[in-house]
Amino acid sequence: MVFKFLKKKDYWTEVGGVEGFTAAIKQLGSDYHGLDDKSNGYSKSDSIWGRLTDLTQISKKDTFDTRKWLYTTRHDNRRKIRTTFLATQIDDLPGNSVRKPSDDATDITYGHTVVSNAALSIVPSNEPKVMRSKDVLTPRNVQYFTMTYEQWRAFCDHKTYDVYNGWGNQLAPHLVTLGITCTIIFRFHHIRDPTSLKKNSNLFSARGDCKNSECPVRIEIDVEHEVKNKGSPCVFKVVVIGDKKHDPKKETTGRPLTGAAREAMPKEVNEHGPLAIYERNLRYANEDLLKEGNFSEVPSIDVLKRTKQQYNRKYQLDENIFKDVRMFGYLTRSTDHTSKDIKGYMQTSGEWPFTIHFFTEAQLDRFAEYCKTEKYSALYIDATGSVVRKLKDQNDVFYYSMVFQHKDSSIMPLSGALLSDHTAACITSYFNCLRSKLSIRSKVARPAFIVIDFSAALINNVLASFNVENIHSHLRRCYNTTQGKYTIKQLRNMTFLRLC
Image (cartoon, one colour):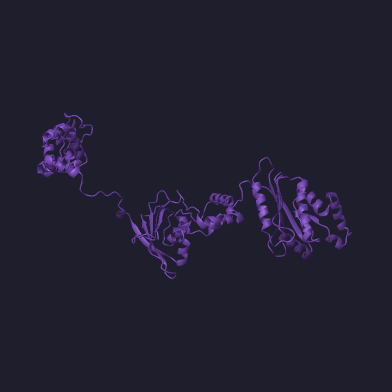
């Protein structure tokens, strides 16, 4: 048994369905446009909705619930009541609404605004709207390239089910072989989940476009044929949409350095310098890409310097340079298992003044062998600045280097130092450190000549460290040598200066 006050009122039956509702609206005449004005509420009985209620066959007309039901039904287009009514309005027009609008023809009046054939403008179209741009009108070019099994394994990480970092740089050479010279920047990529049940999903797909601001080219890449075994290749389908438009005089572009290239390039920059690497890249770059303003294979000098700084910062042991130096010195000593007497690479380090002496036992042994086998052995010493940035509250740091060349071999370093104190005491301390370590490995190793520039500091320090004399006694000894006052054995135990 259902109580009467709980029973829901069936308004559709009382109003006579869609036909009864439509007939009531027609009785309003041109005033039915007030139903579309949301400012006309249904709370008052003398409103447009109260008038519509009186025209219906509903039993309880003058109620708030009845006016609310009519309002919501009309605005929500329930049972397409609004669409059906507007369609009947079109059918009632002369000539089935097919007539040419004239300047003085008025069909419906909105307040004080006269609109010609306005009913046609508010009827919703039954045809579906195209919401996306029509790519059919844009030139499309479909091409294919393949990857071997090894290339695919280096492209996709099967443990994380994602591509490796720098995957765009791996696709770029394949696009160049297809004649695509645009600077393609990939905005999206997707790899199918191995647990996915979607059979029509591609194993890999990517979307990208040209970086040039005036070029409309877009790229769609999908895996057409998956790798089944080591012998089967992976086939990629490339769809090129649009025609390229490049002007290298106005704009040049390039892909960012990522992946393995970003790791390898800074190492070469550290070894050869940014200018040499830039010239090498420019020499071996693809000319077709350069003609189109695509400098992906030739990163600028600023980019090379920036990647070098980021690489050095990445592998820096600590942000505090003094702590980093101590950690590096301890690391080289603790991991050196081949040296007997002189462990590690950094032999002396200090923070104030900033001091570092670095050489290895192998370098000392190689120089000792050179001095024994070469009658007129020569050691080259020089110093230069602008290698290390200036430290706070300290003098400029100079790099001191000692090198030699044995027969036809390349120039080999004996030792190096970074010093912010350029006094005679500090430089002599460096030379004495090297002499004391060298005497541990060889008692008789001594260069016959030391080649330096006209630096007075180097002249005095070299003589004080290697010969324990000053410039006056050295000049006197040189004169005695020209007079033949020394034997060959005595001369072999002396070191002479040679200025260049």
